[in-house]
Image (tube, rainbow, N blue to C red; front, side):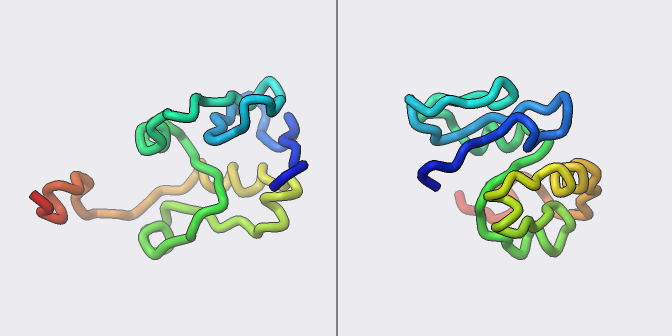
Length: 107
């Protein structure tokens, strides 16, 4: 939201946060790294230990224990650490295929 400021203490010690979509003039704390506007987000997600954002908590994440739902008020107030620590320790239980082209046979 406009006027919302990210703060260094929002993250556990030693963590870095890659920020997608930040405006060019937005200043970030040293543990937040602003990414180019044209970065391919799915690659970042695949290479990350954890993803944080205001997204739909869809059935895939809920059914396979691959995500942690965060209250909006905690997201906006920076109360992230308990959620991040819980998320990083998850052991997703998805047994299905992970190659979308093969699993869904789109081609």
